[in-house]
Image (cartoon, rainbow, N blue to C red):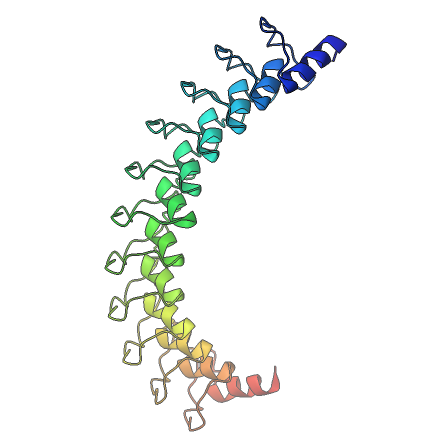
Length: 315
């Protein structure tokens, strides 16, 4: 970089450029122009209009001004983007510098992350925002972002909005305890069939009166299976024979984790291999002291007694 340019850079930083200066495009080896430096320091003239001047990364003078809160009130070139697709609007929203009437929420970077996504992440969407379905390249909507970082508005009702994996806004909301108390769309499912109820069951977030135990994913794993594995089934539950596509029952899941209720007696419930609930309980050391059905056998001839012995001997 020549001495003259260095001198201009110094003047741009301190706001001492000549009043009639017009060589804004002069730049260093990174493509940073005199205009960029003046934008950073808030020293651009009031009538400056070369906002699209860009450095080697595509970062424009407008980006530089926005990053330091120096854009003029009448600025309108929000779509100017760097090589990653990041627009001036993306930068402005981070610094609370979008105008009140801004409406270009769908401006997106190369990953499809929009200005609305950025605003949602920082809880800077206007109160009347309604374009919740705007999605990035992976299908994650503005609503997904909003529920992940902050809170959706009280009247939000688009719970079925889904990303490319089928994960809905409701799936995300249940993980953060942000579903309304009257939520009833428990069967909303992702591409694997995993429902909102499955997630709620895994975290003990189902309502007390929940009764849709048979909701199942593509493998037949029910909400009751998830509840049983975590030990969250209500005391009155009695559908122990509900099974997945391999015949693995809710009772198997409960026995595996040691969550069968006192007095359970359906030890002979078996999966497709003949492996019974008793086998599972024995192999994990969860059989009750009064158990006496030691001769129950799976299809390979293994008895519950042998499973119990293996647990005790560690073999």
